Image 1 (cartoon, each protein chain N blue to C red):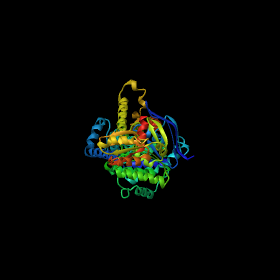
Image 2: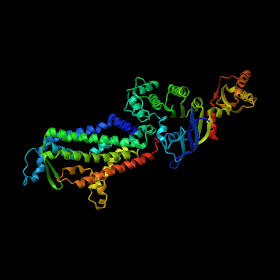
Image 3: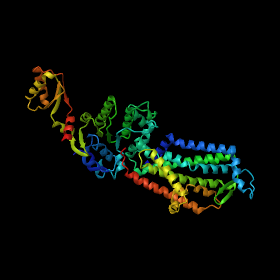
Image 4: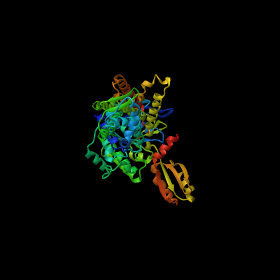
Length: 281
Length: 305
C-alpha cells in the first residue's frame, strides 16, 4: 500500500514539475517541424529515394502517406528522445538529494527498496507517456495529415513495401520495443542518479554513456565485437525490425531479452547502491 | 526505572578516515526533552541521522521504543517525526501538497482537514495553496514543524531547529517545544548550538565532542555542581577594591578583569547578594550584575579539559 502511495507521490511530482513538460513540448515542436517540412517538400524527397529504383519498378499511388511519415519521424527522433527522458528520470533521486528532500523521504517508514522501485515505476510511466505522445503525433497525426497508404521502407537488404493494412500492428510492436529501449535509458539515468547529489550529473552521464556505446556500436573495430551485441545501444533501433518482411523474430526476441536484462541489472545496481547510500546532504 | 525511548550503545560511524562518532552510548527516556550539545563537527547530526536510518552506522546498536532499528525500521519510523537541519521542501509545490506527499508515506496518511488544521497550528493559514518556493526561511521552518507533527509522532527529533530564525521565530520555536513537552508529553530530542536554549528547554542532555559522549545526564544535576559566574560592571577606579573585597568571600575564585571597568568572578550562588551588598556598602558602584549562563561555562570547561 505504501508503495502505491509512494508511486502516486512520484507521479504527482513529475506531473507538477515544469521540466517534465519540456520533453513533451520538444517532441511536439520537432514532430511539427518534420511534418511541416514533409508537407511542404516531401514529394521531392521521396522522388530522390525512388529515383534509383525507377528503372526496374513503377511506383503508383500515395507514396508520401501517413505511414511513411510516421516511419521518417521515428527514424529521425528516436535518437533524441533519450535526452528528453533522462532530463526527467535522471533527476528522480539526485534532484531530491540536491533539494534536501531525500533525507525527509528516507526518514519515513517506507523502505528504501519501495521508495526506489516507486521511482523506477514512475519513471517508466513517464517514459511510456513520452512514447505514446510520440506515437500519437507520428502515426495518428501523420495519417490524419497525409492519409493512409502502403509503407515503403528502405533497409540494408533493399526496398520493402508493406501493405497499408499490414502496418498498424507493426507500429504497435515497434513502439513496444522502442519503449523498452527508452525504459533502459530511464533505468540507466535513475541508477546514475543514485550515485550523485546534483541533478545535472546523471543526465549528462546518461547521454555520455549512450554516446560512447553508440560510437562503439558504429565503429567497425574487431576488438569491440565480443561486447557489441550486449550493449543496449545496439538494440535501441530494434523497433525497425518490425518493418522487415519476413519479421526477424529471433533478432527481436534477442533484443527484448537484452534490454530486459539491462533493466533488471540496472535496478539491481541501484538497489544495492541506494541501500548503502548515507544521506548526508 | 524510566521507560527508555532511545537506547544507543557503542555507536560508531566513519566517513573514510574520519571518525564522526566513536563508541557513543546514550539513553533518552519517555517525556524527556533531551539536548544534544557539542561544537560543529562533534557528531551530533551524524548520531541523529543514524537514529533516523539516514546513515548506516559502522558499529553499535540503536533501539527505539525498545525495538532494534535495523529489524523494525518501518514500525519505529512511523512513530517518529523529524526536522533535520534546513526545512527543505519541493519548491514547485504548495504547502498543502508538500504535507500531503510526506503524509502519504508517513505510515498514517492525514486527511485534507488534518493538514489544514496543522497548517493553522503552525501559523500558515491562508498560505496553504502558495508555492513553497516563495516562502521565507521562517515559514519553511514552520512548515517543517507541521510536517514533523502531522502524523502525531511519539518521538520528535529536531536538528538545530532554531538555526536561521529571527528572534520572534526562535521564541515561537521554544514555546512550541515547551508546549509539546507539557501539553502533549512528547519525547523530544534536539541539537542546538545555543547553550541557553538547552539550559531552558532540556531536562537531560549529552555533550558530544569529537564523536564521543563527554557527559550525559540531568541538566539540573550536572549544573548544580557548578558555582555561579557573575559579571559586574563598575568603574576603573574601584576594580582593585572590588578584588580585595571578593577575597573575604571564601568561595570566590577566578577574579578576572573585563576591560577597564568590569570584572568576572566565580562564587557560590548564596554569596552573591551579600557580595553585592558589601560592594555598595564599600562605595563601589555597581552599574550591572549579571550571572553568566552556567551551561556555557560548564561546556567550555569540559571541552578545555
